[in-house]
Length: 115
Ligand code: SF4
Ligand code: SF4
Image (cartoon, rainbow, N blue to C red; front, side, top):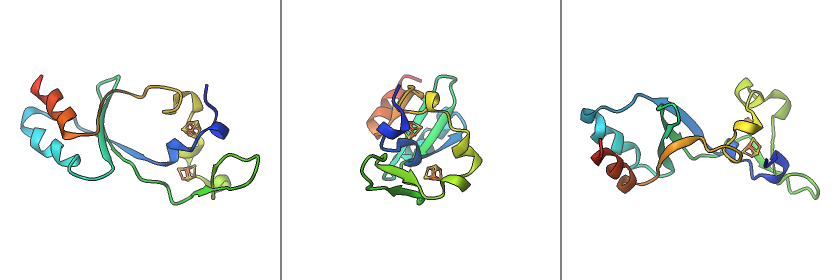
């Protein structure tokens, strides 16, 4: 298992928001997400769709201290519950979160063409 001290804080560099499963009439609107930079779409192993914004938390700081992890949380003691509750075993460094990943329109179109 990869531990946080060996990681570049991947979990603090994105926001994932659940979205409704797109029906056929929603395909064009769903493609729109991927018109934007640093946005991807995903389907997890339970069939839930997610839009992910690849953007760093403003509280993530580079520590630049020898012997310490490369990154740290500037508000560690006051970090919100969602950060406190986040489990190392379920993080993207240690678990494949998604069954399908769409980073490009070509990937998404190929998936829709089979629906
Ligand atoms: S929880 Fe996972 S992704 Fe986040 S810093 Fe730790 S190892 Fe990295
Ligand atoms: S508040 Fe801290 S632990 Fe939470 S995402 Fe931001 S940097 Fe990471």
